Length: 479
Image (cartoon, rainbow, N blue to C red; front, top):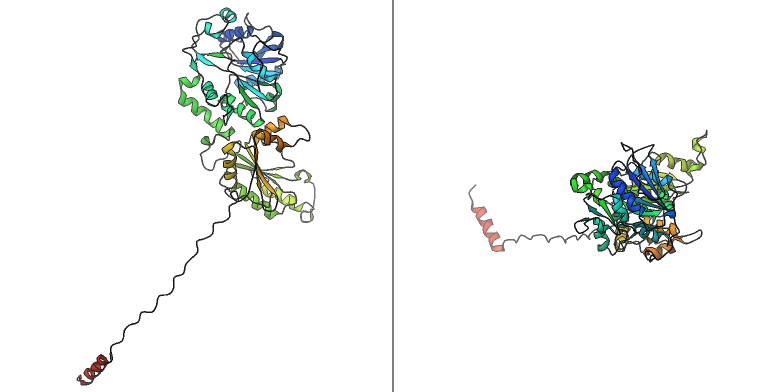
């Protein structure tokens, strides 16, 4: 996929630039001055400055884009809440997230928006460098042809984002491209923003990373654009106290991003978002087979799981009935057995994807998982980022491990009646394998060799002459 050249195309989509702000009026004035000079058509761009309880309140400066609105936060607080407030008030087809202490180059909005005219499942990422804020005025920012006229870019602190993008061939070789979409400049379709639920206001640190992870599970493609340059006025908080900043973000990411296995080393813990969902259809299954299947799923080497039992649970009425003659006796028994275990969910129909859980296993309920099954299936798909691993069982049935991001991409690309696996085969790959590695046979004990009995030790008898001599001595011995 290629995007049109800057200045050589005709934009058609409207863009809403959402800027959360709390204080920092002087820096915000520079941000708005840069946006007023953008090459993107002004009739297709609106700017929403979201005042997150500033004291004194934010005011709109004289130099600002033609269509700029000030939105006051009425409920809640924090960056995530402010961004969500702005997105709800936005009219644009594209949501552009920008911080209130950033100065974007003149082509910034155009560079990121042009990709969204090609397809509707992208998240475009802008570049940024950190600079000490020089004594520049909004007028100077508005008139500048490029950022180098205002800031010393040679001494600017480069973002780790650009290094990662270069190292991974523009994210094409990145295993987890959401890592670089950490704000404060990215753009995405408004429908996608709302489809994943916006930013999480309960995440106080790392909110952009957590949001980007959910976008990845939704199936989006992350596209960095080196032409979308910007400077961040001031060094990031990590430079002031890196150790404390890392510790502050760890619990939020550990609970919400299961792929961060390095953050989930505490044994026996339960996490907000599990690593694997095990889906079992229990319609018509016996109590014994369901209990065995659930026990096997929860007692494997991969403990970070949730079990979903699919069945007609909604038909179980709670009215008066005779318990022992209940036609739904078996189904009700299963519900009563598992309803209060937080690791087990009872649903009538499985969701199209398990997002934000990164993996989903589906297999016959009467084929319990081996302790190593999930671990080995995940190892297999992680080697080449396969979308679906299908294990062909001996009786002709199958078990499968699905990658949520691949399912999400297929949902974005398919229509009614389309074969999801065919799409995944084209985007991520579908692999079939035999069951031996995933359901290993019990190890056979070494054969026991019973040694042959030792021959009895023969005590040699005395020769006849010695025997006769002993008799004579005994006869001649005095009594």
